[in-house]
Length: 354
Image (cartoon, rainbow, N blue to C red):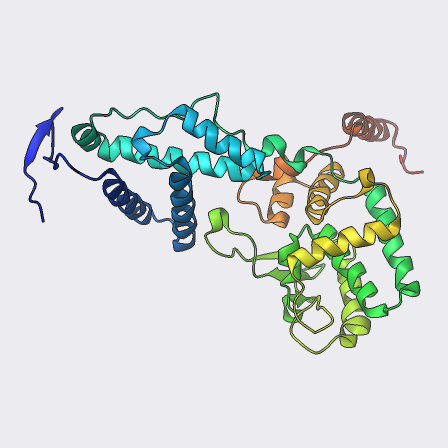
């Protein structure tokens, strides 16, 4: 083991590192220190594990120590991910984890790196290669299905119950997608519901106990209670009384034909299959997540408080909810008409609905 002496560089005491210090070994030590700092900041073990794996893949793709990386290296790696068809969020993840590691090096290791390798740290991520935010290319920029389109889809599912070769899966699909839309659930949240999670006697509408709500930054489940609005309570009463018993006995609410929980991928594929059966053009089709955005938008359009929608969807902040809300093209005009009609009715004493 080589003993290092301390020397002063720019007013800081740093180890007098061996001249032949291996850059890869030193970078590995820096990664360990970076991980230790994440623990000190209170990040969850899941977050740390995911970020560490992503950082290691990023550094391996770059092919040189972080302090030697150039803007052209970033272009090469991020551009290669784009050519391979990787999602914008994936490309952005590579850039963000490298920037975070590089900031750590600048704060903690800059003097040592300059002493050992003669390099002053300058971040190679700039305005020309910083991957755009995932929202820039997100399907969330597309408007969610209109309430009329959603009603048409549910009418198709309801009609199909009487004609489908297998009654139970068709009836389950109707209850599942009604719950997804009216309760604003993520597909994984709905798929993981158990029968004891349905509480008809809780609150004026009954509530669903979503035990596996999405947590912030993969920090673990964030449970919440979701009211069964828009007659979801009646739909689930019917489903539990008349349909669920036709599947094998198990705790799962929306069970597959073996009695197990549906996988979120199965929910997505099932919705795609049903819309193909419906025979609508591709432009009229939507995803399970689009139903969640439609829930936010349609409740907002009919005057539900934004904070109430935030709580319904399980968002940490109202700003997250606002990204889901995409009012219709006539939202301003409709709101104006409602205000004017209400004002006139107050002045004249007439009932605007009569």
